[in-house]
Structures are given as structure tokens and as C-alpha cells.
Amino acid sequence: MLLSLGVTLWTLSVSLSSVSSVPRVSSVSQCNLQIPPHEEVARVARFIVHVCDWASLATVSSREPVIGQPFSNVFSISDGPVKHSSGVPYLYLTDMELSVKDLRVDPVSSLSVSLAQTDYCRESGYDPQSPLCAHVILSGRVIQVNGSEAEFAKASLFSRHPEMMDWPHDHDWFFAKFNISLVWVLDYFGGVKTVSPEEYFKASPDRKTRL
Ligand SMILES: *[C@@H]1O[C@H](CO)[C@@H](O)[C@H](O)[C@H]1NC(C)=O
Ligand SMILES: *[C@@H]1O[C@H](CO)[C@@H](O)[C@H](O)[C@H]1NC(C)=O
Image (tube, rainbow, N blue to C red; front, side):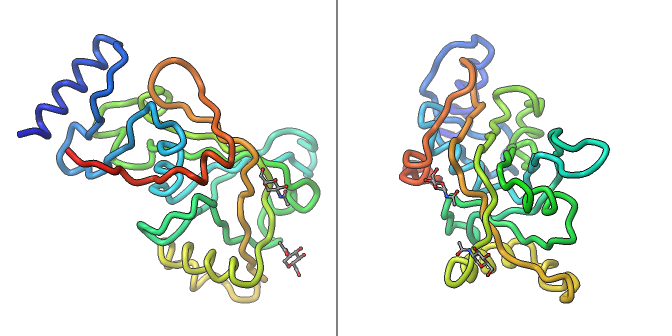
């Protein structure tokens, strides 16, 4: 009852393009994603990074004939086992991989993550390019992790991408993280919002209240 009221109000507020504090819920009951309110930008960013399983990573190409040009490629990510979000996107990499060759030359890169990969945008009828289909762009660099952080990266990635356990063992895989220097959030109207790493890591990706 309360849920359907929330959906109605949200739809109304979107069609009027008015600023509203009505909590967002999916318009379709099968979609269980409960996004934090768009005013809580850092929480929205944490939420997106936690629920998404893959990202587009843009590196500076080190390969002919596009040396020095942006090169965007798909990677599986995980910031923690489900419901154990760290906020740090971890990656499972090998030097045999196309983009990793770029990262060895220059680790500066950008990671783009979108709720377009979840049911949320599809079932709400939000086009991936719409600001209502919340997405984040992370600036930073990819760095290898070792020791206990590599153990956490392994648990994070293998629990959500079990196929990784069977990837060829002779490819010298290692764990890495996307070390965030700035978070750009495109969610709702009014242009991009930025979040510092400090604000981002302080925020909780979970909703504190439910409808
Ligand atoms: C992790 O180990 C690799 C290989 O020994 C090393 O190059 C890298 O600097 C280490 N990273 C950290 C964060 O200590
Ligand atoms: C990782 O990111 C933090 C926050 O932006 C920064 O202070 C630190 O120098 C970065 N570390 C590396 C190795 O780039």
C-alpha cells in the first residue's frame, strides 16, 4: 500500500521535473533495488558501485595505432561480497590483458559504472543516458594489492564472479584495486555532482529506512 503510493508520487514528481524528497522505489515489484535518496550523493555512489558487477575502464592506450588515446574496456568488479561493501572496486587482472599493458605504462584511468546493468533502469523505463538511470564515473589509478587486502579482493571477486576460479592458472593473475581520487555522480537532474574519496568512504550504501 505504502509502496504503491511511493511509486505514484515518484512518477508524478519526475513528470513535473520538480525537486522532491520522495524516496525512490522501483516501479516494478520484481526489481528489489532500493536506491538511497538522490540528495545523498555519496551514498548513491556507494550503492551503485556495490550493486554493479562490471564496469568500463578507460586507460591511456600504449598500443599502436592509438598510442596516447583513451581506450575503454569491460572489466568485472566487486567492492565486497554482497552486503559487505568496502567501496573499493577490486579487479582480477593479468599482464596478458589488453588494458593492463596500458596500466603498466600509466595507471591513471577512469572507471564508469551504471545502474543500466541492473533491472532498475530497464524496469523503470530509464534510458542508460538519462540522469535518472544513476551512474558514476571514478577518476583514479589502478594499483596492485597484496597481503590481507588481496585476500579481501579475492573473497569479493570470487563470490560474485565464481567463474574466475577456473580462469587459466598459468596467466599470472593478480588482484588490484581502483584507487579513487574523485567520484562523479550523474543521478537525477541538475548536472554532475562530485564526491571526494573521504565523503565516499564515510557513506553507507544501504538505505537506513525502508518504505
Ligand atoms: C604488491 O606486490 C607487487 C609485486 O611484488 C608490488 O609490485 C606492488 O608494489 C605491491 N603493492 C603494494 C600496494 O604493496
Ligand atoms: C590513492 O588515493 C588516495 C586518495 O585519493 C591518495 O591519497 C593516494 O595517494 C592514492 N594512492 C596511490 C598509490 O595512488
